[in-house]
Length: 441
Image 1: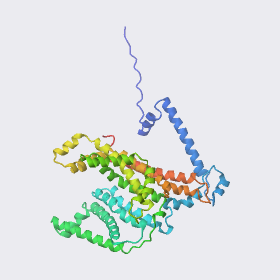
Image 2: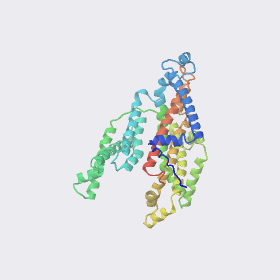
Image 3: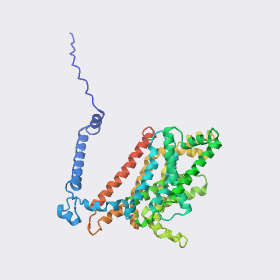
Image 4: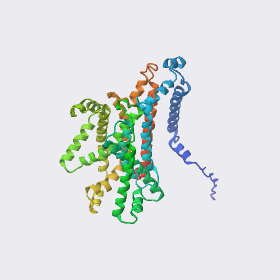
């Protein structure tokens, strides 16, 4: 009996699918329950987005003189944006004099110019640029923001800030064009040879000339004083959070190293500081510093309210950052310490060149998460009477013309916080990928 095998026609080759089509099929429509949940999610998103658009755009009032006119036009079914537009300068700058807001804009423009080289290729001195931004920029920006009389010391500090900005861009241009820093280029040009001693003297002389030129320019500046009581809005929020973020990372590193120190006194003091500030809510610390800090100051010395809030936020953030850094330090294998010791590296060389860079790379998501939390926690300073962005938004609804207008200002504030927090989160993801401190680990 002969067996006959009937051959089946070959199946057609699978169609080429793009990466997006494969991702959609695998993640959104893999099976029936998954597809139903996807459709339900799309429906909820559609309902929410449609309702927000109807309220914020399609049914909104764009021209009115009072909130009463908005209510007469569409009732409560649409947003009343004229009140927000009228108060927009106050939401951004607080009660800062309108004819002096250019000083705030100039101060933040200087910060942007200072940080641009950090994202430019072929710039080798990025660490030095970042350090100058942290140490020298505050002197320059504080005079733009605060103004007032300048003594010799204050003028010298402002001149250092201005000199630092000029040095940053001179170094950036030099490294992009010639591949050498401005110090190396000036040393070889002015010294006329490879003598290291003459090169260092030439660089110091050029730096002194730059400082004197900056001092001569700063001495001609005269800006009226704007007291911190008039600072507010987004400007005040960025000042408090910026100082807190800048202070918390280096202070947290020192506290984490102190807590792991073999010296009992340093370890105990660091531990007490960390546990004390982590065990108390930020709002309590703000109240304590606002009411009790003046009691510990010398008689006749007065600390303004903004300085008290900044000190409280900085110490609170440093305590939390210390625990984040300590977690990163403990994640480093013991073999890294032993390898550094076998190379003859001391404690500080091992810490700064081997252990700490790896720990910071590991903890990038948590560090940035702390920064985001600190940025949002600055809203608590409204409790002690500072008109930050949140408190200024509340003031819109207390205006006689816009009495009761609270939803629209807080909607704008929510979008503002989302933009800043999303930007920080996105940058941390890109930085993590760039440093290979994520999936590859």
